[in-house]
Image (cartoon, rainbow, N blue to C red; front, side):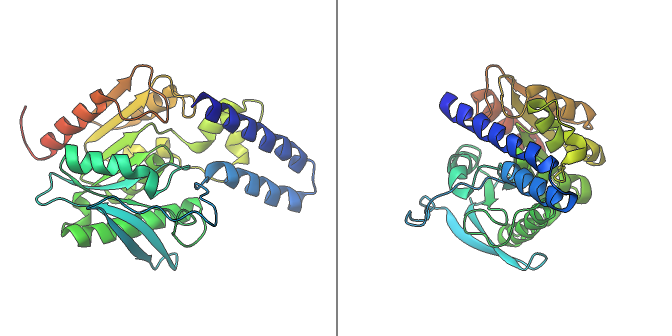
Amino acid sequence: MRNLFVAEMLRILGLLVLACFALTAPMGCQSAMLRTIENSLVYQPPKRGPFKKCPTPPVGVEDVFIENPDSNCRLNGWYAGVQNPRAVVLYCHGNGNDVAECQASLLAFRDQLRVSILAFDYSGYGRSDGKSSEANLYRDARAARKWLAAKANVPESEIVLCGYSLGGGVAVELASTDGAKALILERTFTSIPDVAQRFVPWLPMQTMMVNRFDSQSKIGRYRGPLLQTHGDADRIVPYVLGVKLHTVANEPKKFIRVCGGGHNDPPHTSYTAALDKFFDELNGVKP
């Protein structure tokens, strides 16, 4: 993991050098170059190569396709369902993931927590059509939620939204705008510019960046149960940003601090236990 982190930081530094050159270019070229650099940092779908087979879902997990008429594209997703689920969850993954990398989370939610769950790929990720953008990711999530509601035979308002990292920004957008049965946030942030500013304090990221995912300004409009977790050794999305987001959220809310937890670590047992209790409480089961 250390080597992966170092490689990522070197890649970011290289792109920042390009950004400095872009800032000295003519205005029209400058804007296009900066947007390209920014998008390459925000949206990083895993590259599997032209000769590598597409991952197949594990036994009992359905490989599904979802029509998104708002973006005129088709999305790929993996659905893990159970009979009489405790909850129905829409899982929004991070910026460097795809559904195949959500396999462990899908199986944990299904087998350990007994919930039905759908993970889907954003536009431009995996086998999903289209192009990644903030607006498109929001449209993608709404299309996936609509599909999931029909599949599980529940109203969209009864779906629990779960977002990891960048997916937290997607989940907060839907919860704050449309409501949700509950909201679960894993290692997410206040906004994308806030994360970027931590890495490059010498550039005006708040004014430079087009992608916002401004959860801090939105989460106050969501009024429902919130469970949030963050590792205090997270070197990608700083722990303080998770705490700051939680501070402005409404009650009822609970925050799970994972001591020594990094951004890409497996779920901690304390978080899994909190999830189990969280789903019980959603169903009115008293401890």
